[in-house]
Image (cartoon, rainbow, N blue to C red):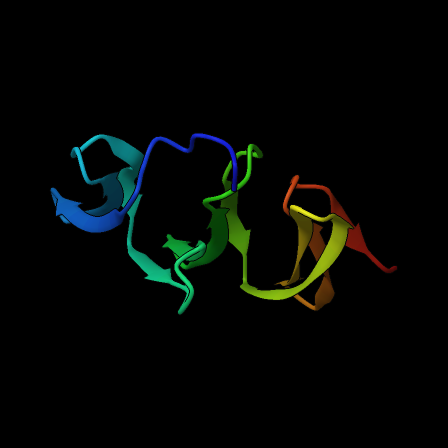
Length: 111
């Protein structure tokens, strides 16, 4: 967390019936396009819902938002990479298929 992430605090707001996230200066961090945004207890990520599908935004990473395209998504675990960085892995479901998506958006599904 030594990088500048353009915020010290995050606030969920609504605009035209859609949810988004702004920082303490009212700069947009997540666009106002989601039906629901649920922050984790730690506040380091949020589950996003849009059109009945789920995605995730991890706030302390340089990777982009994982777009809502999953029937279910749950943050599963962190894999330690260095003393200052752990790679997040989410368990996801699409139809009958279960798998994982990394914080970088790469999907891992078994056939």
